Length: 170
Image 1: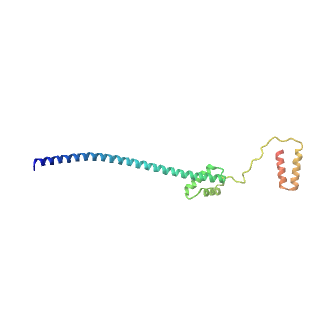
Image 2 (image 1 turned 135 degrees about the vertical axis):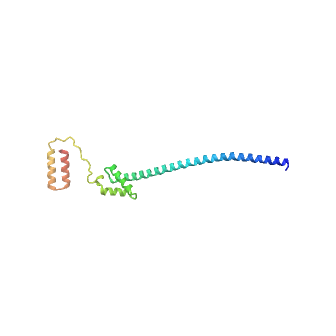
Image 3 (image 1 turned 45 degrees about the vertical axis):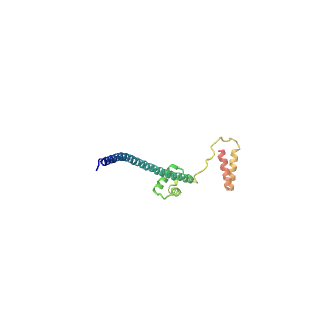
């Protein structure tokens, strides 16, 4: 081998060494970028998991609010007198039996706990408040005539007229 061949081989070896050095530095940079990307990936995956759990919790709260709204609506239509108490009992029953609907729970409450609801027979309009009584001399005569008429006829309308006159005059 001549000296020229050795110089050419030597320069080629030098170029290969330089290429290897460049390749190693680039590999180090790529490795650092890959590690940063993996760290970002794990951070983003954790954030995604947190957001998904938050969405799940919000959906659960929304479903509970919808059930509570339906229950309140049904209870009000049923004429509940103690809304808070009936709502607590109703929500508890719906939680225990997930298949139960709001209308079924209200019907069950009406049967089992009727004291929570207004009874149509006990609801009455309030009467007139007591005002100034007339002190006319003829009022006793009007009342007595209405009482006699009611006693003689036995009619309910006559009795009601007597009671109205009595209420206003006495």
